[in-house]
Amino acid sequence: MILKKTLIVLPFLLSGFCLSAQDRYAATISYDKKVAALDSVIMEQLLQEEEEEGDLYEGLYESWSDTKVNPYGVDVRSIKDSFAIDCSGYYPPSLGKVTSHFGPRRRSFHNGIDLKVQVGDTIRAAFDGVVRVRRYNKGGYGYFLVLRHKDGLETVYGHLSRFLVASNDAIKAGDPIALGGNTGRSTGPHLHFEVRFLGNPINPAKMFSFEDYLPLKEAYYVVRDETFEERLRYMGVRVKNASGKYANVDYYTVRKGDVLGRIASRNGISLSKLCQLNNIKSNSVIRPGQRLRLS
Image (cartoon, rainbow, N blue to C red):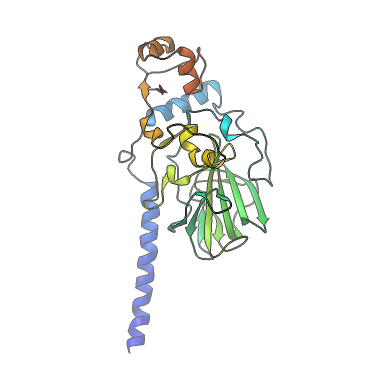
């Protein structure tokens, strides 16, 4: 009798668990952008410039490889500050908890984070993009995917058991792309998830909450010493004031009638420094509502 009742109740418990997971995914897609520290104005401005002047990030990717995770050869020490990455379309690749963090290990560097999954769990695309790499790597990633997105961004998904997409497929954020697994160099089922900018890994925890399944901010600004702090230290590069630097960067919001020279003079910096900080030229068009980095 007890067994019979258990068999009756069990399907309801399982369905409740599935609904809970689905609700959390739904919450991610429909989250209230006002809750996060957002600045949609600058992203709208970037999109306007893309339409009027072409892709602002044209030239960031100079090669396409369907075999290498990082074919770009961009030294992290040479990356300029103040590229903006639009995180508003983020979708969590998995609902699993973090089991291993980004950063140095005993004799190596962990370029991503590990999320707990079971073999056969659905893995989803974090952003809209294109499948660039779909391969097997025996000594490392196992079955893995690399998806190319916009703004110099790519994501990597490792230790998969099965692919659900083909090379060069165009995918949308949230699309099923693979099944979780335990292939390659792995001590148990998990998803190895990386975020890379121009081929260089960024700590995903700086961009996303893996407890709330949301981006931390709608726009993430690449500031070299903050974004790549862990990697630079591992390489032996002396990093100045890296910890907390992202929170302390000063910005100026462009007003009607402003010009770059006047903004620089008013804020006590040179025009060349202002342009360098914002990766723009002295004759670049600026618009009301646009934010410019000052430090």
